[in-house]
Length: 330
View 1 (cartoon, rainbow, N blue to C red):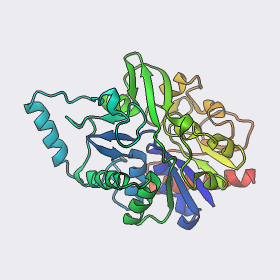
View 2 (cartoon, rainbow, N blue to C red):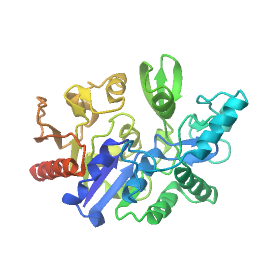
View 3 (cartoon, helix red, strand yellow):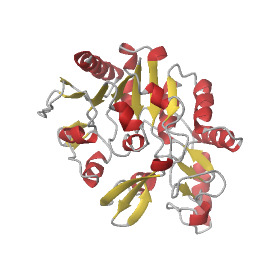
């Protein structure tokens, strides 16, 4: 049995090759929900959705988000209305008193739909409408995710990290902003002071999460701060990892991140923005998988391979290296 911790695009790319070693029946995926937001009244869970679309065979593999071939008529109409009405099209938080009004939400992840700063496809939007409706009916996020996973025919177990609201907030030179605003609206072009996982201290791991962490755990090449960090901030999560076998795949080629803002975010939390920084980011890791050209040395088993993942064949190669690393620990 194996459990993958997933966020962003790094771990989903790795999961394209998971079947080379691990059968779907013995695989659980825990998805980051720190990136979740409410946009125009709809509950959007980007990291969960990427896994739903991937497992359902409809993921846009050019962007690694959204549905392949999706149309964007509703988004375009929203932009047209905003333009015609002289309304702002940038990220607009709902007022403070509306952040937790109605459905329980962590402060500062609730946005107006005017102008819709995130581009959401029409079929993609149907998932958000369904999820939001299930939540409004009283279902938990775990229950809603289970229903959606069934609709997409997933063969693995997919769990959100928590049913409770957690918001990844980036404190920058221009003030605080949700990770989606920082990355989507501002393209990560803001100097980062620190990162906050608001709501994490009072949140609990979702049902089944701590049990899944009793199995061998693989941390894919996701952003250690905003993809994996929200999970580690949950009470009991890191402690559970310290009690099981953990293999971490580097999201860096030496000092360079494969993609995304991992570098500046690592610096913001006082971790070295490189493969070497994984030792402090993941002190519970029992082994690492890093690139064959990476000179980083750890005091734990380290397997080297070409860790670039541009195809399912690449993913299978890295998964086999993970299996090698697991064997060296166990």
